Image (cartoon, rainbow, N blue to C red; front, top):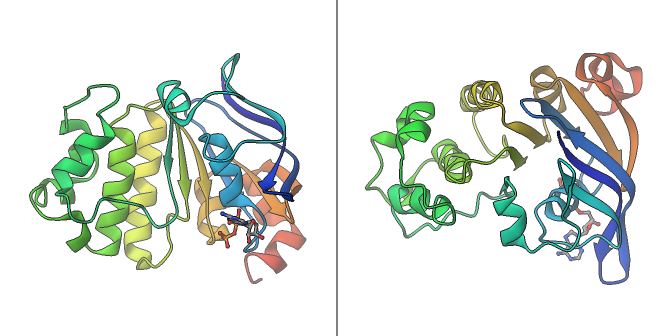
Length: 230
Ligand SMILES: Nc1ncnc2c1ncn2[C@@H]1O[C@H](COP(=O)(O)OP(=O)(O)OP(=O)(O)O)[C@@H](O)[C@H]1O
């Protein structure tokens, strides 16, 4: 039982960005996807959630093939995407943003996500656009969790956030994974991502150039030089 992107080639128009990329996530596993700007990390997450259609390869949850599935069908199969930039509805309250996350599965119970992110509990009536960057990221993750996903895709969690908040949110990811939800984490901060994850992939120019246990990747001379600044 897992979430699998297998042999994915995809791009925009005639420009191919991903070339035969295979990435898997098991239930409860945190997997890091690192690599330079423009490598295709966000594109892979868009393929995973159905926003971009692969020209080759398959997207599967367990043994269910989702190649031709719509964004809604993929969401219903248990995959939730926290996109880069968070994409909250800034004019709506935190409560309404969270409720929208639970709209498809009719989940109105905010308690589990508020227990995970207590800061949001004090801000339910505040417009999401008025939250701090870190709180917005918490709200975006909480909104995705309202769909009770089995697999969570998170793009650039740490972008623009103070390190202390990144630590706080990353600690919550461990708690989320402990409930059985698999997490695919795209992250500029390769060091933090590889510290958190069990496994990782390095994507360069749309190709997986390295993969393996996160500790092994973090110790790899090439990764240390290119991504960890060591
Ligand atoms: N909507 C789009 N239309 C056309 N080309 C795009 C689009 N989005 C991304 N690209 C191109 O696809 C390539 C991969 O971009 P992508 O955002 O997936 O990379 P990334 O690894 O996530 O990098 P970053 O961290 O900078 O977002 C880049 O060359 C980018 O210019």
